Amino acid sequence: MSRAGLDKNPREVAEMFDGVAKGYDRTNSVMTMGFDRRWREWSRRVLDARPGEKVLDLAAGTAVSTVEYAATGAWCVAADFSLGMLQTGAHRQVPKVAADAMRLPFADDSFDAVTVSFGIRNFHDPEAALREMARVVRPGGRVVVCEVSTPTFRPFRFVYKRYLLWILPFISRFVSSNPEAYKYLAESMRTWPDQREFGEIVARAGWEDVAWMNLTGGLVALHRATKPTGNPATKSTEKPTDKTADKPA
Image (cartoon, rainbow, N blue to C red; front, side, top):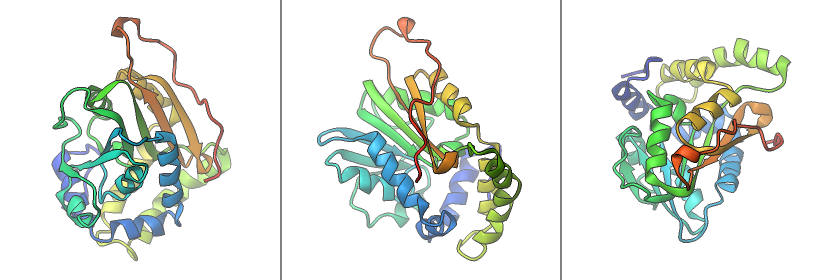
């Protein structure tokens, strides 16, 4: 399977990522001009995992982010439905599980936190996946999602959507083992909701205190939220808000 379609058939998406697993981390660094490292660092800070906590890193790919979370002393497991990605990261010494985000193989309230970095936009039903994440996180636990978003500076937003996303597949020809896959990835970036729209999806999935932080001028956004601790009927109806300032990286 060279690329998936925007219907995001799970089998096609898994096969596509199997095909790009070799050299995936290197390709990401080249395509993002090294910003991927800074974005992972901000994800780690916002997640704020602590020694003794249990963290699920979903859509973890080669587990490069899982290792960084585990360095905090938390017990972290990498989960992904692409066996090729997990096998490529086999040298990274963290637990790994092949898992479907829609049907996670974990008991209710198993984790203190769950995080997804640049993976949720590849899910067939992001809202359903967020509900499933809430199931496996304990009451009061948290979710952190790092994903592409909408640049806040209007002129750059125009250039980004009109030109940069169109040349992404061309650049990938020089660094990726499967350039066709980057046509899908560019299309998925172009159609992904903006910060507020995604925040509303997180809230509809049952999370509360939803907020986001823009990175690199909104090119990427970090969304965070907590699982309610009380009666669902009394859950706050507060709308998601941008509670933090833009960050330069």
